[in-house]
Length: 185
Figure 1 (cartoon, rainbow, N blue to C red):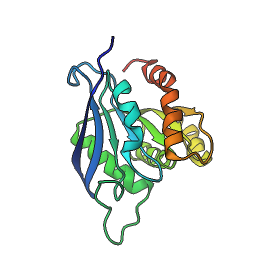
Figure 2: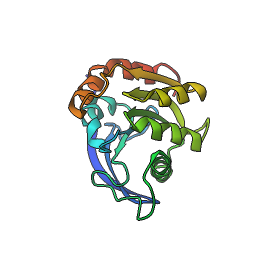
Figure 3: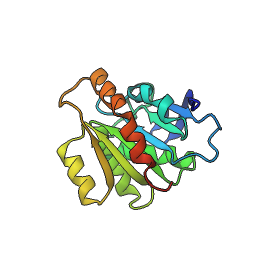
Figure 4: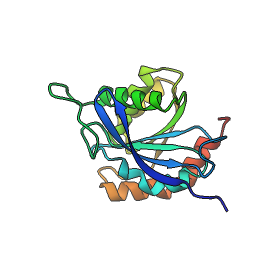
């Protein structure tokens, strides 16, 4: 039987202040693990959305599920600065740089898919290996295709609330694990 990950919460510095991050650490402490996973939440901006996935997905990889800047327990982007996909992506690059992550897989829920696309554009061809979208806009899906990204869309009812969306993602966990594991890490 596979050991479950250790679940933690932490704060990491970014150009917009501190990011509150829900994280899972594999039982081995992160050595010889699969590609780490960044989980980007949607409109409500809380990494807590991904809590049901942290244990199962974190059994063999580190998982980082930040609250978006200005959401949950993260600091805001600052007065006079509009929070949007580009600002979120910049905060995520700060997070991943501080963690010394060179490659990540990404799960993005709802509007978080736009931030995932912005993250790919910040470091094309190097940072994001694979994407999973849950409830992404057609524009985000089209952008992923145009960029030639390896991605998968999860089945999710349009307009589903956070609890239903989280359950839908959790129900598709075996397919998510298979997708992220299907090629060399």
